[in-house]
Image 1 (cartoon, rainbow, N blue to C red):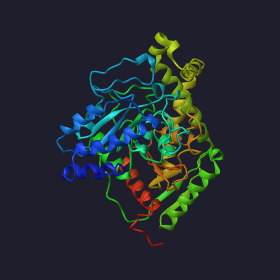
Image 2 (cartoon, rainbow, N blue to C red):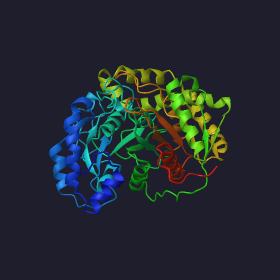
Image 3 (tube, one colour):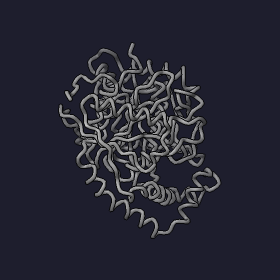
Image 4 (cartoon, rainbow, N blue to C red):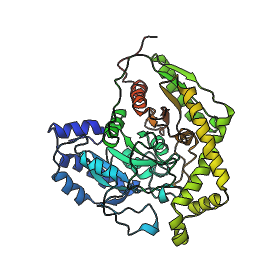
Length: 429
């Protein structure tokens, strides 16, 4: 029997070599769903019979052969409704798949169903619970995908990120996650919120899973050969470090010590005061672009929008064109300065979230440490730090320079191997 904790790379290899079949893999995951979905509520649309039918007809080929995948409910799917967690779209049935969903199917993946999101991938939360503690939030808009992964419902999952919607749930649920550089992955068939930041991303059980999906969704993508030289890593706290809870700060410092003990170079990076405005500029742009993206819904169905989405429209209405333009100009001017400061490093490190998953399902906590780097379109990875079974997950965020996605995944693989204790290539100090 295939274990649902296997990573997608191992699962696909097992199907391709004939060690197992897509049908057997599907049954393993369907058993998990039947047992735990009533508690987790990860799915908004799920059909076990449909999954079994597709698995029985599977060719046994492809980079993702037989791998079960969850799809966030802002991606169009021809065989499931796409509802954006909004009553406005309760009967919305797309006629075709989003481009990335097509690519997943072509690679041999099994689509398990659609996962809960927040309203239009913004703030108003759904019913999904954190598998590590059902009384706590699983995170923001990619929460259904993250919680389903953590509960063992599928081996990969699609999400998106505009502010912190991919990495925050990864941190809270203890998952590997990858948000590529802005613009690398097609957004065709994905409802927009803030195009300056919207990015398709995904969850996996290992860094090699993240790289495997990148090969499927990013044409021509390659991860460079792993080197043996010590990594040069920069740790940046940002001006919001004082919000980090002691438990999280301690776990991050321990991780940095582990990396140094393994022979890698970790040094602190300080940025000028001008970068402290990035958080507010991101929020301002997010609000203005979000209001434009949802203008039709606001005009025609205002009473069916949540208070949090209506508040976004109020903030956008109070923002002038000149203020939005100035915010975009500031980010554009800071981008080359950030690139120059980070040039000496193979990757950057920082907190993913300031806290562990908060209690309750309505508030998901701030996304500041994630959106700081996302404001510049940089690729980002969450590395789950090793915790005891009684401890809640904490994530280490890794960032690479814009369009240096392969180098980031390479560095993330090496960092993850050190932090998991599986590093076989320790570097002599």
